Length: 370
Image (tube, rainbow, N blue to C red):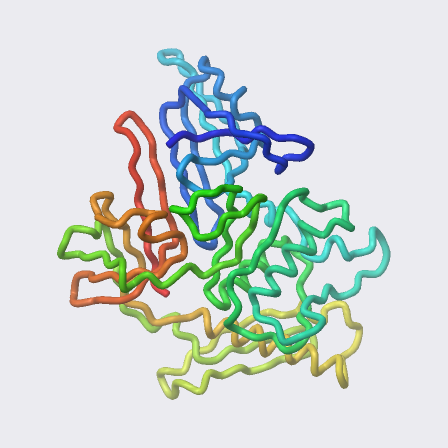
């Protein structure tokens, strides 16, 4: 399963073919559910591997779907050995960490107005993620467009936002991550492919998929007693189980409760939402006040929904398991885990690492509580 660099036409994502990368010593290719995927390629300088993978290259992995971007070249020299090369980078969706939410709708100079999405209201959080990504990356009326990139939302339920949402002007990755976390969604950057045996989406263009995986827990079950679990982290805790949130801004505050907990069970967290009214010179009134309070209430519920009492936090699966990635299960899917201490629960596939070295290829999934 070789790593290859995409040859391009008129733009970085205008793929015209693939060129295999050869003579590498070791590669680690890590796909992730919500965080950015990463890769690391190691080899010898004399092989010319730096010329094969120049900075900014878009690369793929045979048998894997993610797109990655070459970001760093490192050369390590030693008097006793051949100079070593280390090449690293992240998945295509990492471009959100270098774009600003609302930048394409901001004036080049002058007064700054609120950046508002979900103008029509009554949309799910996943649709708001799609709107954010399309506004900053896909909208052809702006100079920031990434040509040939597509955004597809595969999730049509979850939190409904009934009113327009004010988004803080910060790096695009921040509001995207917050909205994804609200409904436990993932973001996957997928290359064009026609592999029916892999993921059930076959895009013709590089695509960012907003998704939640599938529930394959009745078909896929990893068992501690059958040797499937390589390593497990168990935790019984209520420390993060927030029952109430105090949301504050420059002029306003809102208390959000989940209706659960009293006495010693009551637990608060504090959210700073000053970005909603920090440009105002006096306290808001009327519709303006109602809109800010609504936004703060939504933010409070987001915080509460993100806290859970957990038992089995993280699991690394043995390579010897009978279940195969991209055949029996895929990124974001729910699988069943029969662990030690009598624990049996559904868990989500949140990471998959594919490693190549002198021992050959091997792969390891990581599961996380939902």
